Image (tube, rainbow, N blue to C red; front, side, top):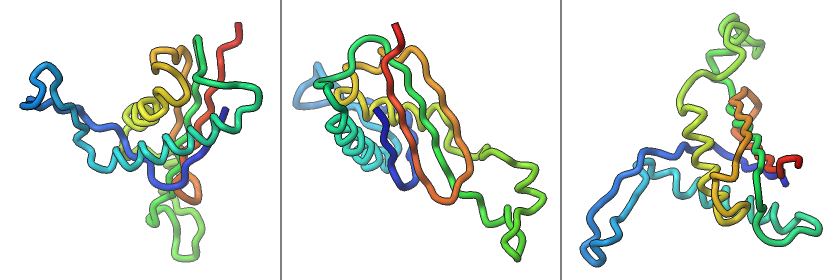
Length: 148
């Protein structure tokens, strides 16, 4: 099963818990990245559509799974000369090493797919993550069952 999302990926931020005055037994947990919620909603929608397209498979994926995520970001303008050719900086920097960090980007995707693609992200036993340069912001996700 695979899908992609256009637009800038947002990392899952740190979690913050607050006292819930209406139900003290269940605190309110929020993400400190305000953009993470709308991003996760886009991921959920794309994952739901991909799950609908799966031929012959109903319900959540069961058992151990493997996930591949590619986060594509455009090169900064400083990586190009005035004629549009790659600069010396671009040649020295083949991969984006700027924030956000790869694991926080992946965590947002994993959280968004929980309950849509799989029961729990603990089912992920193999994961390949990469952040690369491309023409536009895009995230590509592939989820497959582990071979038995």
